[in-house]
Image 1 (cartoon, rainbow, N blue to C red):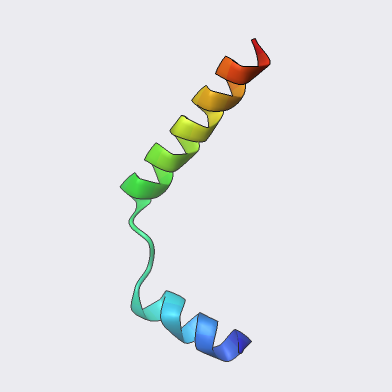
Image 2 (cartoon, rainbow, N blue to C red):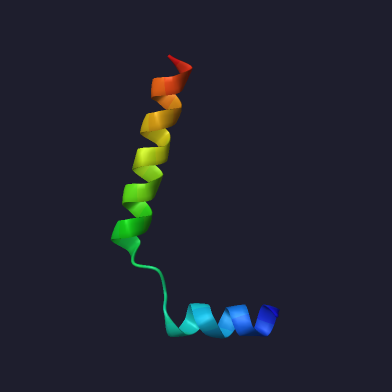
Length: 35
């Protein structure tokens, strides 16, 4: 199971731009909901 997931990640690494957008969106929503 872990080996299969490792193979999947090595074949298709997640794009950094999508990761950054997701992180920024999450932080924005956290701040918005906290205030």
